[in-house]
Image (tube, rainbow, N blue to C red; front, side, top):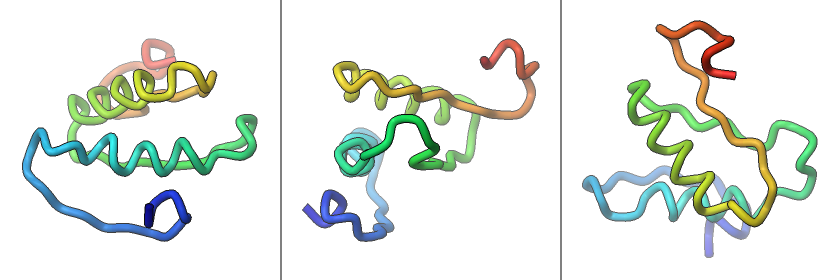
Length: 80
């Protein structure tokens, strides 16, 4: 509820506890304009960035959002 109301949040929990869904649902629910940048999510590793991206795509599959990970180490064309 706090995320859906638009408040900033910081949280910490163990792996597999639903952090991506908890934060992601709040972000996705508050998107009003799909043609502008709405959120930037920082992840410490490329693998986690890809994992978070895939989960957010799954959560928002009916919302027609453009969600993509951007990370170092691979050519930009490959990421696009």
